[in-house]
Image (cartoon, rainbow, N blue to C red):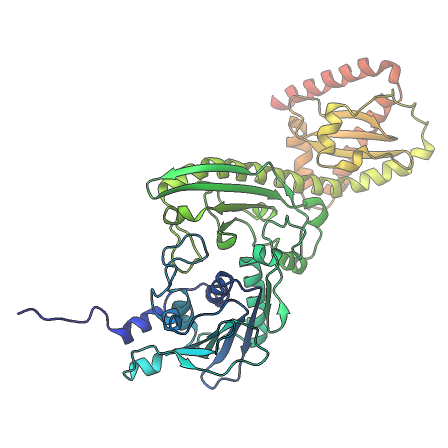
Amino acid sequence: MGMHNPLVSLPELLQSVRHAGYLSPAHAVAELVDNSIQAGATRVAVIVGADDPGGHHLEVQDDGQGIAPEVLPRALALGGSTRFDDRAGLGRFGVGLPCASLSQARRVEVTSWQVGGAPWRCALDLDEVRGGAVGLLAQPAERPARAAASGTVVRWSRADQLSGHPLKRLVRELRDGLGRIFRRFIWAGLDLTVNGGACPPRDPTLLDRRAPWSGATLFCTPAELDIKTTLGAGRVRVTFTELPVAEWHALSNAEKRARGITKGAGVSVLRAQREVDHGWLFMGEKRREAYDDWWRCEIEVHPSLDEAMGLTFTKQQVRPCPELIEALTPLIMPSAHALNARVRKAHRTLAARARFSGTEARASAVEARMPALPPPAPAPEPPALLAQLAAQQPDLLTPAASPEVRVVEDDLGPAPLIEVLRWGGRLIVAWNRAHPFYERAYAPLAASDEPGAADRRAHLELLMVALARAEAAAPEASATLAAHRRRWADALAELLRG
């Protein structure tokens, strides 16, 4: 004779739910905000306090359409969603509210009312379940003070998992985390607050001007791909941005942290306009470096790719399947390498700018004592070499207020050790990093902090400025002098190679 055993042991199941693994309180609270948005809320207020005897308490109040009394118990039932496996919204599985709530608190209450209807309340208490209570029952409740015509209030009591967070820091982390996760909804008009303070819509790409901090530029036109895998098919949009190294490199470390520059590298993954992950994804063999703080990637994924992305019910991490990795890595990894190289070059240019500043100031200061250089031949547009240099130092193209010497450097390939340019009242001396003399003689001095190294480096720079000035003083023989300079640099390279 067969024996019937319960499919689950409810007290142990609910204790297990406490270990759903939410990365932060903000990720858990985001599950409740999802429900509010799904219910059509335009205002969502998170209120957290520390006066509960069993831990903090937290409420999420919204002005959504509310839940009918006969449906209300299902909101706290595992898998009780009326929209199970509906990919049109933010949730699919009907476990977000109870799992998120029990992961942070020992009791959760849901009070809801619809237009013209009375408020009803349903509660789930871990300690009561352990004592034998197993049912969920909606009961009449009092309407919250200053309540909207319809809405829902979710309250966590005895929130022991929040108690380890100092209240002030918890409020700040909730604002920042929710503002980032729901940034697009906030831009679309959602009023989302924590303890009365607005959640800042933080954009990790630092591109959107509606964010507290912006200033990045698009690296290239966003790519849109239709991807098919055995686990699903859908469209993916990939956007890369570059942060302004020249403008922001001198910010303090505290300011860089506040703007989200440092420790912000990686890919932000959006599903249905909501962030579901942020990490070092689809990078292949590319290792993360400090330079990677200065560019960003955002991937928008259609919900039809949930299974391929390995998205779980907590909506906070993805585990892409091999097919998706193979489809996206060839696009993302090369762009990551290219952006890293551009950032590296930008930082190297800034370092050179600081290094050359003393020589530039010294050379420019004595211009008044030197024979005036003849004006350069007029040109309708900058030569190609100057355009290349100005890509990293745009001010090279702006007219100088007075005669000025600028010293710059770049990888000029097989060019001579230096190139000489005239533009906008400037004498521009461009060092070639690819020349053996730069690599073997100059670069070690530039990197050295030994006594006297900076003076020896400056003397070499002034030597090249003098050579460039002598050439610029004889424009009628510029072609001959340039050819002579090339032969001299070629001979120097051969001598160094031995």
